[in-house]
Image 1 (cartoon, rainbow, N blue to C red):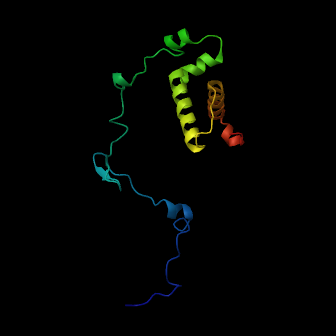
Image 2 (cartoon, helix red, strand yellow):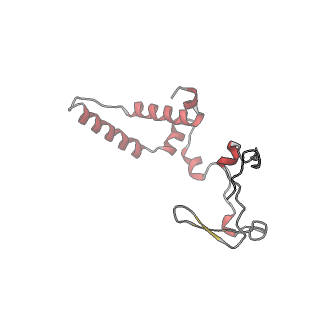
Image 3 (cartoon, rainbow, N blue to C red):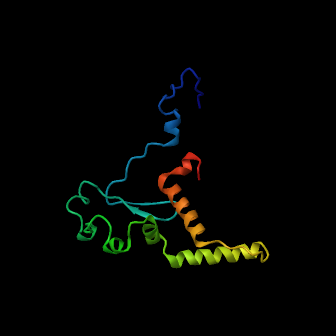
Length: 142
């Protein structure tokens, strides 16, 4: 078998040696109607999006709700922000969090008398909610 010298070997294609080409090799899409299997065993059916996906969507995909607050929210929100907050976390849930927090504090502190007022819990949860809503985590406040 004749050996090839470096001078006679073809020059490598610069596009094929780029990091982008090595990271994502070009693979031709499968023709419509074939199946492909994923590494986890999931079977995917290929479709032609120009044919099967055309037309009106099914009746179940149409959103028919009226925008804005629901009638329940309108009835239960007064002029205070606390009433709106109680739609997110109701009093039953707040009392449950309070009882569980106090029970864990008693367990950790070996029956040291420790309690948490409900107003303090509401203030803490409101701050956590506001930090998440306003994206303050990226600012380093939360």
